[in-house]
Image 1 (cartoon, rainbow, N blue to C red):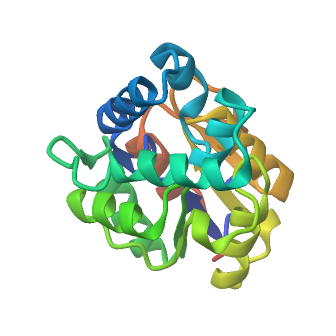
Image 2 (tube, rainbow, N blue to C red):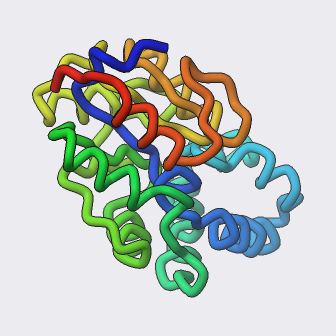
Length: 209
């Protein structure tokens, strides 16, 4: 993959910049018990998706009002569960590399603003541009969030690199027209072992910010 034309990097948050997988799973497991849903079924589809989208798939009989209440409850289980939330391997190295290269970046997350700010804060990360589920009409895999982030950075989305650890997010990046980099063995235009891997790629490639 040719990274020479990259003008900005757009990150997913949970599992990509922030290691919060355990907290996410704890919240979904508790929510599933409360709503009489198989926890394994919830965990199988929840990662990377907005809570309301996951809940509609798990409980299709719920009306819009009930879905909103259930989604709010799911998020409430996550707000204060930060004890083991940290930056992912290589995250700070990569963000330092982006600063040296003069490449702008943003975070696009299926979390709401309160949760995103709490988890990024726990990881010691301040996002210059943050697009949350509250900023879009439709969450991932719809491309709206990544299109909005590119527009806020003033960089054509075709020159943006979307970094994701979930297939639903990669689908959103592809649909937006961005290049993709995938963690956790998933298929992107570039496969990453960790974020330090991407830092090395970018610093060894002439870029055009």
